[in-house]
Image (cartoon, rainbow, N blue to C red; front, side, top):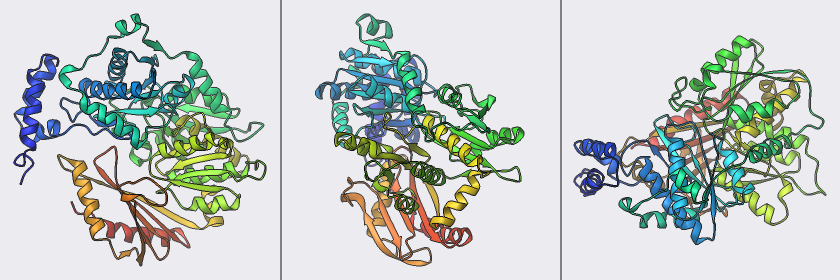
Length: 565
């Protein structure tokens, strides 16, 4: 039975009919809804469901329809957030936006909806990175925060990411409560104030410059070395047409010896991302133009941040003049040992490292060597932020030294409760400068780390789901895998299966499956919460890179056989 035959088509057509006829929708939206209704496939894609609101808020393609990012779906989400803020006794929210198409407009609508509900909206007067939104929520003592961004997604997308009063992305409970309020809202009843109206009522405020300046100072306070190093390091930085240019410039400019050059063609904010259609700093093709520029300049190091500047990509110059891109795990492991090697124990208390379950287990060996304790959390930096919050409540905040995830997210301070690309740029530059003072490149440093702690390789597999209702398709896939788990992983039998659907190891319930073989190799499977993709995180141990890559290759072939859509 097709989606159109099983009733979804009728619901989609009904929704589209409202968008074509209701006077609350602007003329262009009504005309586009009518055009979409003429195509069953497009009708189902745009109106067959509502954009799902979860712990990451909303994220999707920009366009007309209930399953697209537009001023009406944003207004409905903001309406739900307003209901939640008032229910928990909050009276204000901070808002920031990145360089994507319609980000400024969506930020204005969000502020207008909140103001319409009597909630004070604090809005940055120019585009800002995600970590600066997390910081502003706490600095201004807001009840919530909204970041308009789709992070590293393709240019067609945008998003509405929600933060709690603690500066972390919202919890499952908060997301469920906000969803409840969203479901009560009707598109035809949505209202929002213009910026002028909100300002005249004293409900729209510009986030003061002092918040930005305090963020920069707090970031610089997280440097590891005291006094600062002064030896020269040649560095190339690119913001990939996003928000990172000014704050990264202001932080690195305060570090002696760091000689920074910027990739001029990628400095201007541009939601088209003309030089990198998928602005993900994990991807080789995304970094290619910046690597070419670094090669021309003979730079020791390249650092890139994604559009909302919460992730970083790193490439290091080799002795032959070429560049090697370090994986997110490798950067994290290097930073972990660098920080721990300079960390003084506080009254005999163990430093705390927080990592996600899909991040390299080599972190355990490094932590043990320095007497540190590792806390594991589910995938998503919000869980790292939550642990920091609990530590703060228990008077143990200063025990936290580092949090990281394999997808290029890092944090070493507590003033931000999300991954912080500005801070990561600073720490990677300082670390590279420290190694350079001893004649060591980051490539040589990672090889030394493997020699000291054992070789472990990782690989991320992404399986794009081509379906009009991708979330349902992904759930179906994990359901099939749950019912028929594999017997082998790599060259060895599967020895342990972990199903997080009902909660596992003290962690919240999540649609995640973990398979571990007799040698400690792993395959962790989870549907993405932000893209129509199933992600599989592979890891394998071995005596050397050749053996591990061969094992990872065998695992990849097996996984491709598991995931048949």
